[in-house]
Length: 365
Image (cartoon, rainbow, N blue to C red; front, side, top):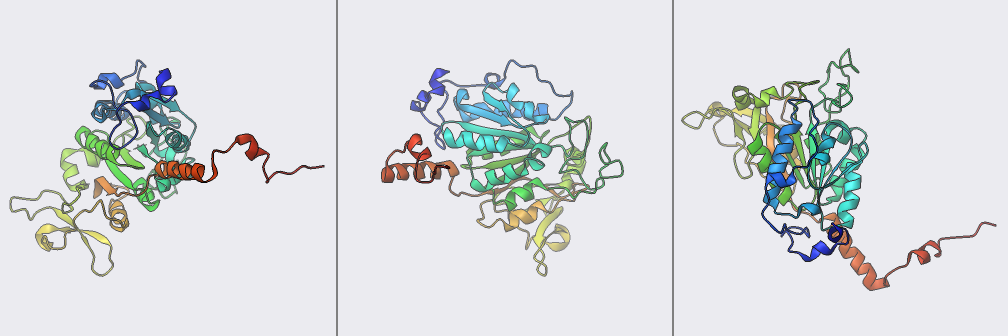
């Protein structure tokens, strides 16, 4: 462990996309399971996400002592205890800020943030959007159960308007945040959405996020079976999901529903020629001409943002899942390191004592 703390592990072979050292030997999910008892409510969706992450991490082939999970406050924020990696259970809403400092100072670390809709979008909203706009090399997993679970069932920043809870017995008056829209609006370079119970899709999205250089935000619809059970049932029930879920795939037409034998059934997403807004049409009536093709790599966030607004906030019908946006732009800590090198070349190494006693100080008599 001392080798890690002194940075000596950087001499090992690196993962191709980062400075994080590769593991010395092949790993399995067991290698990433800690010895701590998992203490979530029985049936909580967090268990499925934890299992998916533990099962996925060996794919990265990273030295687990160079992997860090940082969390804030909430049910999801117990996550670092259950990963056999380094981790920090930090303070309410500040996980992105702490993770930013860690990623900037230690580029040999793979830094992951685990947060919830309350933690990230209430007190932590400011920290989240600045991490996104800076494009720090972080992977942010935002568990969204549309409720405050740890504090026993108050409405959260993503709860639908009119939500009846202990803190809103007459119905919530607040308009909910859409995390994907928020992230795209903050110019995040990678934004995706998945569902806790869809292990295959969840793993695919995690894989794409891990491969992305810069900030990747993954919203995970996660069921709180105690205080908001069934909130995402329309997306999980096999029959309902056919009409409710839009699976986004880069380079593929944006269609959903039952296509039929002739391929002309189901629904598709088109752009209204008058308003420019996206709308859903019956393919049998409209035909396949004009069906939008998903471009996750578009430099403009316009279409990705429009897709994020398709879902009905109450019923969740027409909910897109998958990668909305995946674009390349400069990574914050890479540019910061280059800037520091240039400063040293130009001015030489500075001294803290000289800085503190420099020209911008004065004596008060």
